[in-house]
Every structure is written in C-alpha cells, then in structure tokens.
Length: 307
Image 1 (cartoon, rainbow, N blue to C red):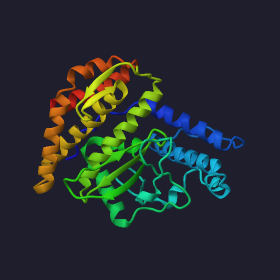
Image 2 (image 1 turned 90 degrees about the vertical axis):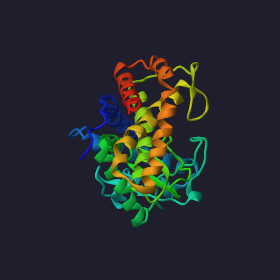
Image 3 (image 1 turned 30 degrees about the vertical axis):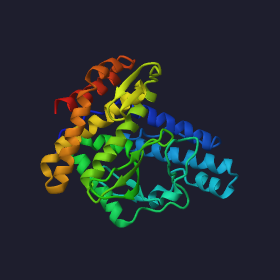
Image 4 (image 1 turned 60 degrees about the vertical axis):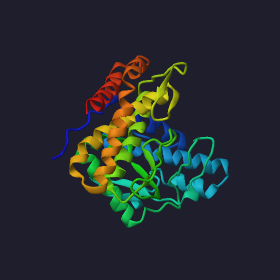
C-alpha cells in the first residue's frame, strides 16, 4: 500500500522555477522571443529549471575557456539534450548518468566535485538506470513523489560500494534539481539518499523563493557534524535528515535480512541525533521570516521526532 504523501507542495517554489528559467533563457538567447504560452505543469517546470541551470553553467564555462564549439552546443541544446538521456521512472522521465570521477571538476562554484551535462554526456549503463528507476519507484511509493519530481531531476551515480560502507552524497546550489551520490545495489538505500539530497534542493529553492535571509550570527550544535554550525546549515540538516527518518520508518517493514538490519541501525542512530535538536530547532525556526516555510520545516521535523 502506498504511504501518504509527505506534504511538501509549496507554491512559491513552483513560481520561482518558472521565473528563474525564463530569466536564464533570456540571458542565454537575449534576441529570442520567450512567449508565456500555456502554463507549464510543476513537473515540466521543475525539469526545465534543472536543465536550464546545467546549460547556463556549461555555457558560462565554455565562454570562459573560449571553447566556441561547446558554447555553440549549449546554444543549440537549451534542454541539455535531454531527449537522448531520459530514463523512464515512476515520477516521470529522469536523467541518470554515471560520470567517471575524473570527469568531476572542482572549482570556486562548489566545495565538492560536480558534473555538468554537456555534449559528451551519455546515460548511465542499463543496470544503473534500472537501479535508479527502482529507487524512484520506492521513494514515490512511500510518499515522496512530489519531492522527487521537483528536486531530483538529474542523478549522478558515483562510486559503487557495499552495504555498510560510508556513502557520500551532496548537491550544489548552482545546479538545483541535481543529486550526486554513491550507491549500493539496493534501490531502497539509493532512494533514501536521493530523498535526503532532494530535501536540500527543496530548501534552497524555498529560501530563494521566499527571499528568506537567515542570520549568520546564530549558531547551533549539529549532532551530525559534531560541531557548532550557522543556522543555515543547521536548518538544512534538520530538514534533510528528518526526511530520511520518515522514509526509513515507512520502508523498514518491507525489508528483511542485512538490509533490514542496516536500515534499523540507521533509523536508531538518526532518532537519537534528531532528539537532541528539538529545542535548538524551535529557536532556529524563529529566523525563518516566511510563516508557510516555517510551518513546513516544523511539520517535517515534528513528524520525524514522533516516529
């Protein structure tokens, strides 16, 4: 039976997706006409928002490198050549790639490596596309379809690891809707990590859409980092980790064996850390000026604490 949807529908994000996409396209092709046309669905708007950021990043890098061929490619492919890359999933077509680690540059735009869709991009091998599609299906079945539709359009699968290994995953603000993550041969685990990173993308979009500026002066203890963190990072952790707690609690009864033990240990660990944030989270939420956004963050945190 499908789980109830986690309530993350947020109209300002949808408006921001459409507006930001129009603005980027106007910069990339200022002479072109960009008619309003028929209003896009949130799903279509989210995909275009994500892909347009890849095109902007790729075109800017090409321009700085004076790479005319690459710049012309981005000009001719405002969708980053998505039709050739799409993988069908339960939440609609997604782009699943598996770039070699040496193809992930580091630069001033991100503290972590990243990958930009471009002329040399190819889809991930079939087994990894199947793994990702199965992960999307599990995530959607347990109530996270809207989050995955809007904030996990591109998934870059990195290192193949074993269950129990440390799994690294991240997002970068310059490429919203894109998730980078290690993986094991378990769709249930990949779904957990994609949901976590999609949560970061959601909150970044929500803060931008509501023009919320969080004070950099206040700091809070993060049990995940074991250090004091600015409110921005603390609130991000207190949103993305609770999402994985909610997901794991829902999916756990359908698992068995090593996978069940792995997820049980994860859930127990996260419950303990999350409990220590209760008082500080209430304080940190006062720094969020938008009442609707504050309500969403409170609701997710409270549901995870109740499990």
